[in-house]
Length: 392
Ligand code: PMP
Image 1: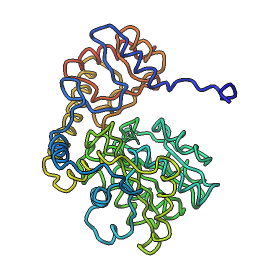
Image 2: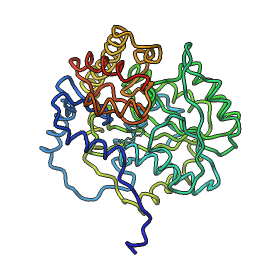
Image 3: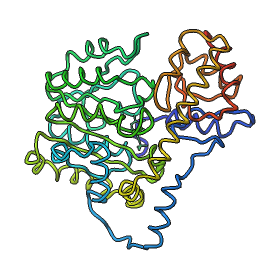
Image 4: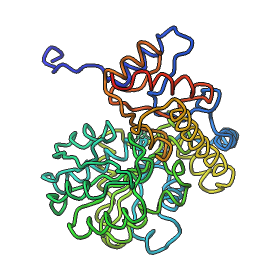
């Protein structure tokens, strides 16, 4: 059997990370890994998380099996975080704890494949690198729509033009906020148009919410999603607690199915449980228990998310200013106004390779960098290096 396996090369992102770890140059910069880092370059355990963990450890609850849907308190808390307090909206959702945001995406696409195996999933180009493998895993077709910005902001025309051939029942992936990898977010008007477009074409929005709280604030970042939910009968949501709770390795997320009304969900809700049962059975409890505690008494946690959000915004502004001071061209001008951790630099693979080889600066070949991988001291040398390799 083993000899018959098709060749699979190692994941390029993780290969790059291991090259970085072996780089002996002290000035090396890791802008590859998609994790928040503080000014000391570490990915901290939030104080609110630490407090919840201590309380959980003291309570010493049994590690008995829980349920296929995971932690029920967490599921309710996530529904409120994503949808707000509106009872009509909340009545239309079924939420299930998942193995991170990735697990939520996989559960949801497996659900789609069981209902409409000939559906096409539409994702942005550029887009999150794992969307294609996730969406095609159960055999769905995969197409892309252009995601770009003009001088005036988000290019809605290009997106809707590319989505025009979508058929009823197709799925359109929308990033809830802080688009990965471009940092280009839709404005409220764009969300209104896209929401109306989905309703008119009867395509199903799948909102990938991996960075809630990192863009304009916890509630503001969910405004687009809530609009889509209010105007479309069926919506899917994949949420991650990796970034906004710092629970990366605890693999905590939620898969939400929204139907036209509560009654429509009754026959649907066992299906994601069946899918989970045939895969990993139950999701890990620890991260969800911590998240449930944060969601129940959110004050301290929200303060910490706001501090992370502001650090991202400050780093973006500082990098934008440093690039301007170095005389960088127009392609770099939008870095400062983009949202979230990621930006795509206007640099080709050769320039990214030169950054690695000549300056020990690691981004990915597509020009993707994690802005919050930087410390303030690294901004000036980064801006200098970017200007040197630009155009190569
Ligand atoms: N969607 C997007 C757009 C992401 O950027 C990420 C993580 N980088 C995920 C989903 C997956 O999140 P998780 O690590 O919680 O699986």
